[in-house]
Image 1 (cartoon, rainbow, N blue to C red):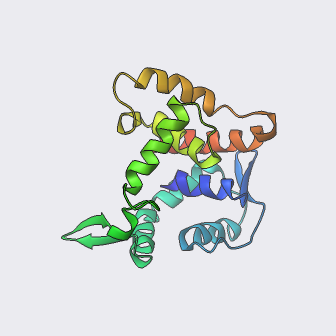
Image 2: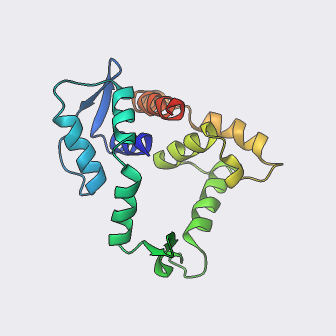
Image 3: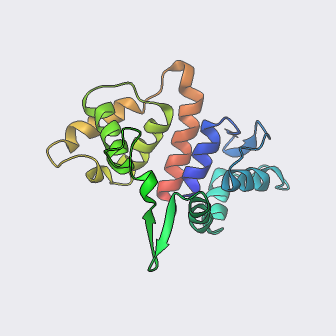
Length: 179
């Protein structure tokens, strides 16, 4: 979760890495409590800290609890017998016939297998899924080898995106190797 929060702040162009240290490039609030708290913590640090420091610090700040609380407040999730469930209004797509999970899974499959152009957030999600060995959640056993190769190509960034891609890859590598 810590890596995902930092990656989202990079995608929103709020933070960047400079000499392996996380630096603020835009202090503007994001209007999301978890992202704003993280941005505030980074801003108020005594000095710029290394990426590994922020991943470890954010991991121990119980981000998952805060994110779940935020999603419950926004009526996206609900608690039922100590389990989290999607609220039914969020289970349906705008067409009203498929689940949000199916819709995301289908979009990722189309991006990888049908060659559609990925959005930046989809690239990051695919990279996290690949590095954590969770491609099995999206692709069948017969598709995984092809998907793995295509995802590797998709997450390579062009010249115009190379700085952003390098930063995201550093966050991804640090997140996946964290305990």
